[in-house]
Image 1: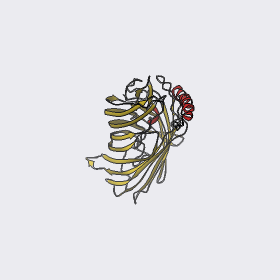
Image 2 (image 1 turned 90 degrees about the vertical axis):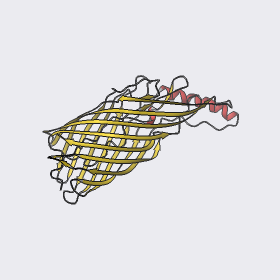
Image 3 (image 1 turned 120 degrees about the horizontal axis):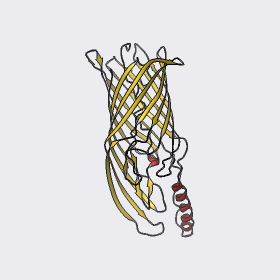
Image 4 (image 1 turned 60 degrees about the vertical axis):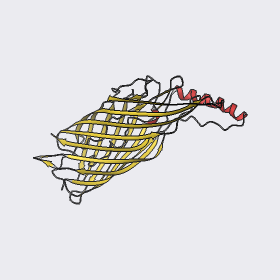
Length: 347
């Protein structure tokens, strides 16, 4: 049933790394631990590890993300942030698959350009000295648009054995997006990330059953502007689908994300020291301890429906893909709803 279908399986890495940076209390910033270059929804898709015919492939992902993070970091004062994020972005993806084989795997490469239409963040902040009864409350809001962090995939190898395709790829996230350490909204993260991804797709050629998944390990360099080192990350992305024809399929897609190592920063060390000193005083006064200043290891999961419609226009087949992912079991990251509408075709 799928002998003639050509689908852009290069849906894995996409840079939508809008950064939240709340400039609070003498330059203390919260936000690097709440997101990363890994963005849910862009790694999981139909046929995501399928071995493609040689040629050029184009894809565009239009994404809407509405999310919130209510917890905050204790940085020398009581700070409670209730941050709402609304994001509209599109990512243009160009991939080239060659007829060259390396260790039996077909070689390809890709380039991914994210453009943010609008990133709007609003935050309500309550801050006040630890030992005083008064607090200062205020609200702040900002929005931004422009190019995000560019991604290159210099290596993609795909093997095919019967109904099974296996892919190994490397994605490099480059700090090309707008970034100012004191701004509320940034479009880049100001550091490099390297994502090594391995995946498998099983597609039954007549019954249309599909099981696809990716496993990725991402490492990050330090943000020179803030001396903040984000921890290493693990992500699992999957799709289970039923294809009724070359033109139509539906399924369930989702992800699991876990930060393997904690964040490191002089700011975190200073905040922990302040917390310990203040807790000594609060204990003497009979007050409860302030919460731990941790290493902000993130974790989250998400699941939702995915649908594909692939009509033919002349001798070309164009693929329209829609998905919605609901996030849950979220710690130290934004939690929300992700909607994506994609179009893909080959040249």
